[in-house]
Length: 427
Image (cartoon, rainbow, N blue to C red; front, side):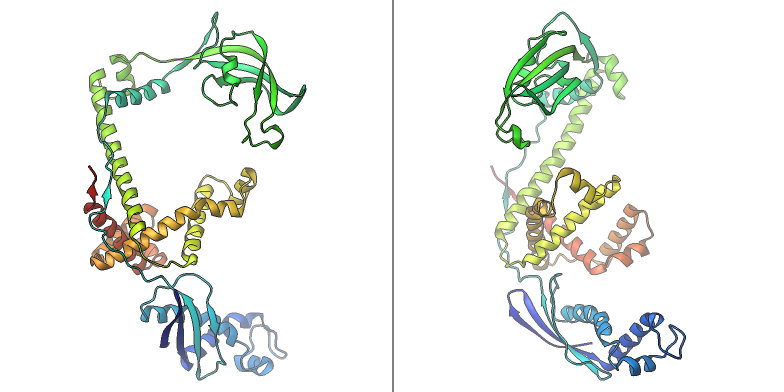
């Protein structure tokens, strides 16, 4: 393969003229023949045993040329683009391939490439730091979660329902005196004040006792999902079967010994504070990274091809599908049950894809400007780390991922660290 020329024909589109020598082309033709001969019948020969020359005499000299060109051109374009210093973006390729033959072939291909990128003033971008202070209220709220997980539900009698109670109810919804679909249930446990039901429902249950039967009037919100009930006044016939309350354990040394490795409440609180501080520090770093990334998007100067965004959307959808599969769920089944369409799924990920593409382009350029390329040792370490993560031999990882792609990923990580280290906190 020989790159004859590389010319920009429009924004992010280049025409490559590539010469493939006769020897390379005819090897591809022979490879195609070997793959296809088993399916070819020629009179006088057993199926799959006809020589290539006989098949070509029967069907024409160029019978395998088209498929041979399909075999050749992807790698030819990839090699030519690398030689031209271009990074190809998965997109439509306009091919112009004149007659091919034993003397070889000249391929003209118009490809989409990553954009030219400029970025300035990335050193010293500002961000608003998140407070790392852990208050007594923070500690109390965290302990309340533990108390809640260790609570027990008890029945209460001889009092009216209050916010926070669990009311076990029967209810039947009526619109114009007629029950509507989905509006009836028995022994439904409703936490009053949770906002789980439409506005006004829970408020009108509060104040009633177990055994009470009563009717309430409510109006469905205008944005309610069921079209026939949007903004409609309805009635619910309700019976309270039982009232329950969540009973929290007492926070004392005995409780602490049961739920932790500590012997006293003070020691337990100190540990909770330390762990909250670690969590808060991680959250603050994530928030700093988010703010820095947004600043880089603002600083980026590039005309980005739409194909890059669409490719990233495809990647994110594939990731989502893999997560579903790990839970034993098929994507199409999930979409059917949730009412999700291909268009809605695309739109769900589009903005995130745009952000990720823009930030990565900015960081790749910063890595180039700051000479932040990884060493061979860095790349090898990353391969080993991935092998450990996937629990496979490192040779399989190297077969699945190119060293160049891994090096690019490491360079982007280094650039992000560089920008974060040089960021300036706002007062």
